[in-house]
Length: 341
Image (cartoon, rainbow, N blue to C red):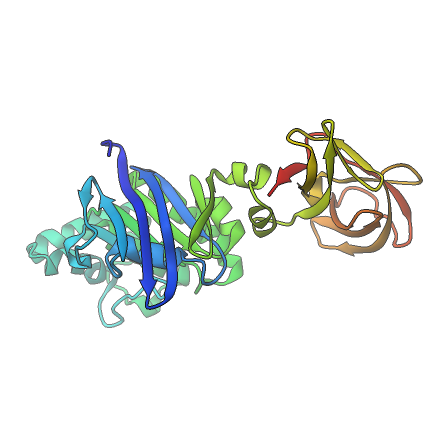
């Protein structure tokens, strides 16, 4: 393991009786990197986080943190901070005492711990709120206190377990931006768990997409969105039109759809993002018919019937709407379709 690797899984498996929660996963997370585990319920993302925290121990395989094998170590023996869904703040303690609590129970003099806590609160924009109780703070401020309480202990790794699940939709964008900014400012190695695709795209250096206990794909947000390796990833991250057809001689064909496509001949499936489909009223190939046009504020969303699939298309609100029943030609850039498994 190199010095720039903060977390490493080697063939890690976790079973609960006969149930397989994590199935031989291997990955490395670099120091200062923010990596998100993303996937549907039951995919193994939260179990993977708990394996890093020491709240679960692997059935098989090795977990290393900062170069140390911690596979059989309890949570108290790992230098890991955790931000929970509920924030887990002590309601009877002030903001300052909440943040200083960790160093104090580790044996640091209370005065020294409080000064360190005060400095962290200043850095994250909570100066002047030290004496307040958690109930006197907004949801976003409580989230910051939870982060401050974790980072004051200078952990090797900071873990976020669905941290925005208790934040209303309007505040979520602001708070996720604050989390990302704090992670970068302090140079923290962070692992984030969410089922929200947009949240994962917004905060991550890399995303680990999981399915049925295994890693389906690891990549940057842009890689996963623009170059999904599987139909599952394409469909799970954003909207995708999955179209089946045949590849022959470097062309993908399905009814009147004919596009260049690399790879071996034979049956194939492509992923086509809704925003990559242009629509021109009138006849042409590939042809479609607008079944529904929906106004979504920032865009028009169309349901299109074609000879090869029912498509979802998304067009800018600046374009004039195309009424239902209109025949359209589909304008698809040659680089837009991605071959998936």
